[in-house]
Image (tube, rainbow, N blue to C red):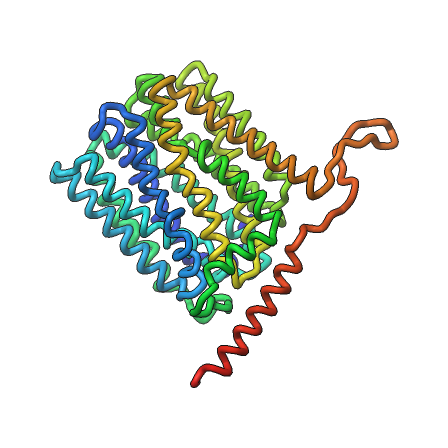
Length: 445
């Protein structure tokens, strides 16, 4: 389960990221609560707009962020982006503490944070393959999710208490300080032990090359379609938990923070279970999408605060199994030279759908109540399941068959290789070798 921690660089990176992730979840909880209760009148749409501004740049800046992840030194770029996000958190904390924060100023900070995060996220995702060996990438991806959600278990609960005791402003300041941990970790990561990689060359066509590569990979396309549906309409947990706690059950900040922590219990379990698997599989993604739909349906029907909290454990388990498996499937099957651009596309589709889905889900919560908003999330899991089944039937020839004992079961009636995957990789390798040869002939060095 923890085999990736045998690598020194990954141990250092993992420890620093864990501390920073705790601070990040504290800030997210404080930010959502500040918007909902202080800067608006329990307006779920305002929370949705904040999320849209924070995640929208990942979609709009996609052509630049993926290429940056493949072209520049990822370690140095992470030091830059992490430092900028710490500075933004500190600035927001000062504004709240001096009572000068407004809803529009918070929108501005959310947008600025989203722009920096748009570059940080694909670089951070691709950096995993730099600090661990190829066979450990899937395990490292799962442990990163476990770290992120262990922080999600701690951060919201601590934030809920701190909001009640010292106020939201100091929570933002504490988050800013937590970024020092990841900066120190990056400082001690040994560049000599990082994996060698082919960097994207300067010149025309490098951005389009990423899209062209994905177009030849129907297995990646179906994962991207599934992650878009769930990421757009399903993973709007700040809206679900804040409106259910405040509007449906009449609870305060501490109870809201507890809901996020309870969901993280399931999320950590899902990530650790993913880490135990030797490799990610499509069938796991199918089961997880179905489980997410069922769990969200149960959450929408939960009669009390505590039953809702219990069901959130299963929502977290299904959602993290789904997201970790999808992430690992894309990372481990993508050729290293394209990993940054493909992961940028992945994160843009996953998080970039938030500007579409979050305001819609927020409007549903305002108009018909938070239970109907969660029902929208449940529907996203079932739609993702349908997409996967159609692909399995169309490309993998999955059929219902009777075995020798006349028992009905699913089976692949005709093995069909993933169209284009090996061919695309071979063609890409030839293109890269040709580009290298051209560069060597034209370079004065």
